[in-house]
Amino acid sequence: MRFKNLGLLTLLISLFILGACQDPSTIGLDVNPDLLLNAKVVDTSTIHTKLVREDEIITNQNNKNVLGYLDDPQFGKTTANLALALTLPTVNVSFGTNPIIDSAVLVLPYGGAHYGDSINYTAQVRQLDELLYFEDGRTFKSNKIWLRKTDIVGSKVFKPSYKDSIIIKDIRVGRADTVKKVIPQLRIPLNNTFINTQIINAGTANLASNKAFADYFKGLHVSLDQTSIAANKGALMLFNTTGSGENGARVDIFYRTTNTNGGTDTTSQSFPINGTFGSAATELAWNFSGTPVATALSSTAVSNPVLYLKSLAGTKVRVKFPYITRLKSLGRNIVINKAELIFTIENGSDAPLKPIPLIRIHKWDIADQPQFLPDENASLNTLGIGFVDGFYNTTSKTYRLNVTTHIQDLVNGGVDYGTFISTYDVVGQSNRLDIIQRAILGGGNNTSGIKTKLKVYYTDQR
Image (cartoon, rainbow, N blue to C red; front, side):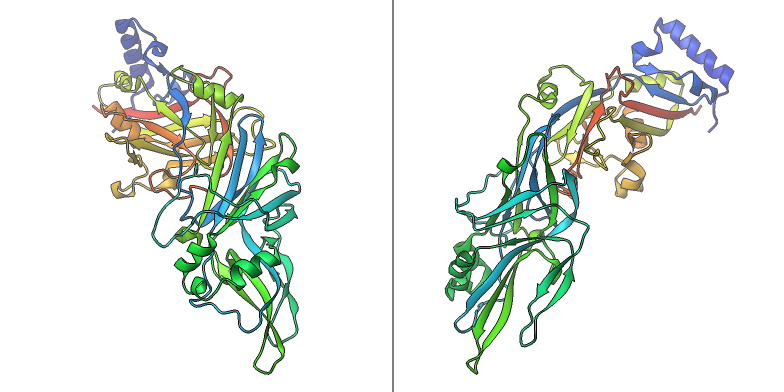
């Protein structure tokens, strides 16, 4: 393999242009004059980028779930509520003799991200009015609206604080109570009468097994009071809805019982939430009426100049390379050494809301099923997500995706059934809810200096 020298490459390109009576832009290629000094780089000029709606996502069977309400002038209003099923601490739960409730609290450990305004919010808890049961393996999509009862059975005014540990009272059986430090968490007090009626006095049969308890109790629904959130304000928050013990999501019930000596013991029981196994789901709603997103989605043009990429079953971008096979015209046997697909964010769109930290790329197969690009497919001896990249660069304000093998396949005549940019791993269905941000990007036909680019490094093997 060798690189063409500058004079020979210039001659060949000149002959090609003169012979075809075309300049590079008419075949979809802009050859960067500065980079011709290295005689091996081109920036393609014709890339179609079309904004489309993302498919609904499965929101249970995750480690994390989302709670929040965000009114974004560019993207509209996003609502995220929680549906939570409780599991028993053990089979045949007993609360002892003459149980008297002291307090109960819904504990939701923060999941490491808060996107939006750091202001006071009011969380409200209601009882579900339909079954959320996980042991049969069923899944629930993000557009499912969960039935819930109207009565509020718990509430808490709070400011998101996902980095700060808190101090709580530690109730100890047979010993004096004390205090302890716990991981960052939202603790929502629950109504004592509700817990006493619905759980402590649920009856032996309803507390015999997880299925019996789920059929009886259904679960809890958590939302934010939107009436207390001003226009163009709000936040989305990640919570860990799994785990165990003090680090897990759960309902803690503190109560007193009569012991065998006729005295009183103070004790507690915890009802875990096992989100990984499906007992927590996120209910998502998105109203983008009258926003730039609505205009972009309704456009019939083949390409959008501005791309509004949104997580949480929001949007994705379909990318097309209509003239990619004409790279062959630059030599007799073009080999792609490296190809980068580059997206640049719109000026000023990184504040106050930061862009998505990572974008993902996948393609469709002949059956319109998502597949990794060859560049990310470990079975083809490539290096995975680190090699493909897609992480946001705060200095250049760009995302770069390594698509070398994918572009080589297309240059060689491979069929592009669809190439897509998304906010999560569509193929592996991982981190569906871990990304809660959005980004505004320049599209393939953007004229403001931030258009999508495909930079190709190549050699010509004879």
